[in-house]
Amino acid sequence: MVKFIHTADVHLGREFDQFDERGEERREDIRLTFRRIAGLAVEKGIDLFLISGDLFNSPNPSKKDLEFVFETFRMLRDNNVVIFITPGNHDYYIPNGIWDREFNSLGGNLHIFTSPKFETIDLEHFKVSVVGCAYNRHQSNFRLLEKPELKISQQNSILLFHGSYEYPNQEYQDQPFSLEEIKRLPFNYIALGHYHRHLGIFSEERKACFYPGAPEGLNLDERNAGKRHVILGEISDHGEVNITIEEVQRKIIEILSIDCTRFQEKGALEMKIREHAGDNKILKLNLTGKPTMDILETIDELQERFSGYFYLLKINKNRLDTPIDIPVDPRFIIGRFCRKLEDQIDRTENEDEKQLLKVALNLGINAIREAEKR
Image 1 (cartoon, rainbow, N blue to C red):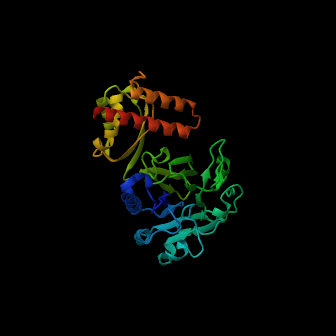
Image 2 (image 1 turned 120 degrees about the horizontal axis):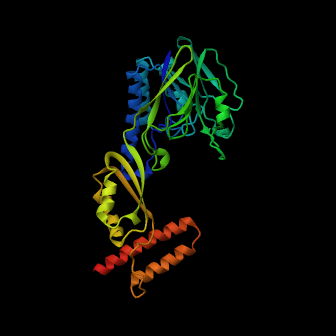
Image 3 (image 1 turned 90 degrees about the vertical axis):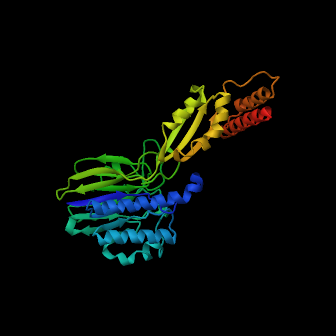
C-alpha cells in the first residue's frame, strides 16, 4: 500500500493587493499552512507528497520562500517522505531556473517533472508509477490528455497534472481536458492543480481524480471562499483507492451579500453582520438594495465599528441604490441632486459606468447631509 498527500496552488510569495496592510501577514499564513501540510504528512505516515503546480506564485520566488521550502522539504526527506512536483502556469519551468538549481541536494527524495512531455518515475517498493509533466506555457491550449504517450510499468499509478477541467459550453486555455479524456486514463489517482476551489472530478473504487484547491484563500471572490483542504489518499496493492479530505487553512474568506432594503434600523443591520464575525474570518461584505438615509450614514461607520470582530473586513457599497426615504421635493438640494443622478443612471447602458454613478450618488448624498448639519 502507498499513502499520499496531495496539494496544489499554494502560491508562496503572492502579492495580496486586496488585503491592504495585511498582505505580508497573508504571505506568512501561506507559509505556515504549507508547513502544517508537511507536518500532517509526517504525522500520518505519508509516503508520497504530491504538489500539482504553482507551489510558488512566480518562476523567480524570493530567497526567503526558497529557503523556507528547502527546509520544509528537508524535514520531509528526513522522515522518508518522497516529494513529487510539477511546475504550474505561475512557477513554470525555465532552463537553469529554480527547478534545476535549488533543490539538487535533496537527492532521490525529490522528483521534479521539468519536461512538457510525460515522464515516469517507478517506485518498485510501493508498486506504483508516478507520472507528470511541466506546464507548457508555449502551448497552453494543447490537449495533452487527449492522446497521451504514457509508460507505466508498475501495477498502480498516479498522475500529476496542472490544467483546466472543461465545464460544458465553456472554453479553457490552460492545458484543457474533458471528463471523457481524463476518465479514459489508466491511473488510480489523478492529482490535479490549477483551480483554487476544491473539486472532486470523480471518485470510484479503483479510480479517483481531485483538485485539492488552494490551501489558503488567495482572492476576495467565491472561488477562494470557504474552508480549504488537502487530499489524503491510500492505494492498496490491489489498486483500491481510499480518499479523505483534511481542512488546513488559517484564515477563512467569506463573501456575504446583504440587501439593505430589508433593514429599517441600523441595529438590525449590525446584528446581521455580527452573526458572521470571527477572529480568523476575512469578510467581503457586498451591500445592495435601497437603504434608509440613516442606514446609509451608518454604513460609513461600519468599517471602524467592526474592526475588532474580524481579521479583515472589506465593505463594498458600490451596488447600493438611492436611499428609499430620500426627499423627492425639488425645493431641496438633495432631491434635485438625486433626481439628476438617477436620470443619468437610467440612461447609462454601460454597467461599469452605472456602478460609478451609484458611488457618486451615495457620496453626494452623504456630503450634502454633512453640509446640512453645519
